[in-house]
Length: 300
Image (cartoon, rainbow, N blue to C red):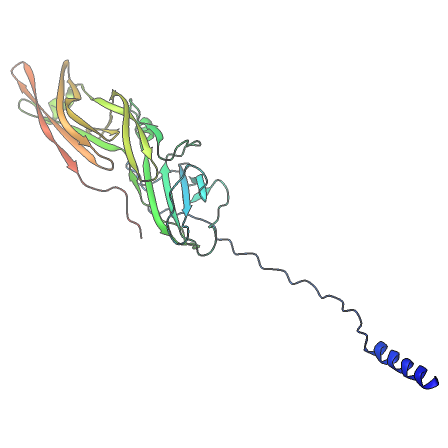
């Protein structure tokens, strides 16, 4: 009995000696937050037809659509990475209305831009826009400008995203030149007015592809006179053998019937030659010339 009790006590002592003390947990190692890359825009390629560049206070709308499984996705009215986010120009750079970031460090995205910014876009494939019928002031002329641009497959970077914007409207330039019986001085002494007639002034803009569709009834546009010629921004549309320009020289009024296709991002020149014969005035009309110069700029 004594021997058995001794063995039991020895085993108990061994078991007690092997018992581990509780381990105090060390400090928790914090997990690193993913690095957020701010979205910024370039300033050196934003240009307008009316000026050498954007002016302080100009605002654009930006849509950003992330790639899905390495492929581009379709622009939607809502639910994009950025939906109609306003960027304002402060004279040197573009500032977003709120801080915006790329999705992550690797996902590319398509960027869509339009000017001027509007707070509500009910359909990205049918943005309503109208040029001013009275563009005789530089303010109304500028207000008739609409620009659009897209950059495909931009990759996350701290460098600005560069977007080339192009002109959605067509630019009509009307020149009045002296013909027989006139000199530049005598023609300049006449009271001359020019009206662009029979053109639709409203349009729908597809922000997904930059297409323009004229809509509504036809109206007249009073162009802006600058440096001896008249200029107007016109919704792209086809004019077929109808009155398109009305000119008044003194008390005489004349009209031009013409077939012309006004196109986005194109200038169209119309030269009107005034011939003075006897006591009357004859108007000779020069043909339309399409200028293929692209005013959008270059993406580096």
